[in-house]
Length: 257
Length: 265
Image 1 (tube, rainbow over the protein chains, first blue to last red):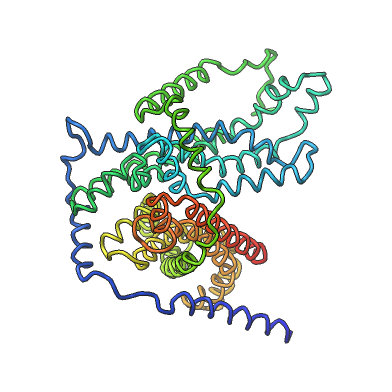
Image 2: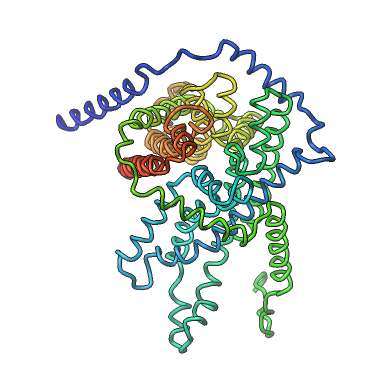
């Protein structure tokens, strides 16, 4: 009892120390005096958006920016959904594999997951030049981490019955994969892919901030040039698009489940 | 026998192939359209690969001595994540209560707060940071606020969902002895929720450490600024040192937080 109380006090002290360290000398100064005014401007922009920007006959407008964003997300998701499959089979801990085997796969996937997509995008921009393609490649590579992990869990939860039945009838490895494994894991794979697509749409909206295409580029430009009504319409466009994609993807995922 | 369907003698029909075929065609069209839209091609990728390879070659060996320069920004990153998560967690509590259907009677109120939370979660954290930088200027404050807003969306959602599944027994027992609303929440709801709530806060902290590492790209403080700096000066060995440092910190925070969460639940 006494020891338990000590542990409690210790935990409490550690938490207090962490918070003292966090908030000690946090630079509260340096806030612009215009902060209130700019906040009001942004809200005014949100409620009186620049509707003219939705469609411009020539060149860069909201709809084309959003279309680019969706295209980046579609392509990025597709790339990762294909590339993560071998990693998923590598990292799944069943089918009589050693723990080292699946463990290394899991570690690699979690390192890939940790690598922020925006940093990957910076690197891909150096390789293929600025633009949407670099963004799609970055999303594709980053998403492998999460999709690979989810796919591997799906493979682990697979029922061994059909595979054993097929082995008993003397099926080849290809036939086992096609008739026993794929039908079981495909709905789960598709559902996770759709979920990742939702996340990728969100990520794709920010890639433009560093020049990797999509709606982020005009947004950061409007912010820097203080076109608040344009900031407003772009934010509204992003919120509407992400909400619609979430609703549609959620509907398809419920049908798959 | 009433109600049980009579088994038909015929074999079950094989599933329709047409639907799958159409879905496949649709997906291929979507991919082709997307690739066309953003001018993606294998040609460009293969042309870019040597560049990519040069870049990776220049990143090694990482410049370890650069650590001394980035320890302080890295500590700032962690401080931003802790401060943002805490602020978000505090604001999330009342919103979670107002969004739970077993805490608030009126569906108008809890549906309203759910819609607000859903809208909040559509805006990515980096975008929030860019907005707050425009409002408050460069520094850690906009970063903390962006993380706080993002945390409210996540923590409040997770909390109200588990709030709706709590055991009603203690609440009914307290109502029957005449406890008021405040006593009800303090003595029957809070003890049940605390482990879950702390677990969600830790989970959000993991996400926020990752997010805080890149907020510097839009000028919101932390280590992110140094990515752009070193890449801009083409000092890829320094970039690599930062990348490895960030990876190590994020993995360490993940590990600690996961262990703590396992202990809690």
